[in-house]
Length: 267
Image (cartoon, rainbow, N blue to C red; front, side, top):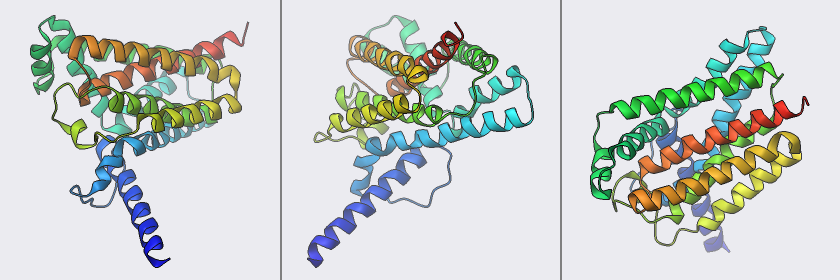
């Protein structure tokens, strides 16, 4: 009995460490010192979706404060656009820019992987970042204009998108065989666990408001399938940068679905 209890306690500690590591890697939320040599790092992708709760909570708090202060749609939308970057430290945006540079090069697969390793951001990376931010800003402006406000859907949406991208990180082969992603994955990973989590989040969103949630769920899933196909063809699999690029596109697609669903309610 004691041995079984010790085993369960060890698993709980590993899970908590995995959650902490996910927040350390993919957010700027303060966390205690972590032992990166432990097996807990193999749980990072499983716990990665929980980082989305910080982004969702930040969105909801910001929308509530802006509504309380009767702020205009431009100011409110600017905050909604920038908050995910502040919360995550821009790690996904960095990957997005690197992949934009690589795709715009039209070089061989090997050369594209080399371009993504370059610490300098090229013109196409900057252009992609600007387009992404402008698109997000426009969508949030429309959301506020249509009367969008605090919703539990907004809390679950970033969790859902991260579960999808975590699935991509486990399902596709590692294109480089090294890097941060290789340190948090293992051959025995079970991608279906993250797909179940994504399904649970989608179910929760639909229960909160199926009118607001149906399109975000479908749009993000469609974006994921496109990203997986593109990653296989262009890079032969996934890297940390490709995962960040995929996340940004899936999140934008989800927000587009959210805004479109709200807008169509007015007709």
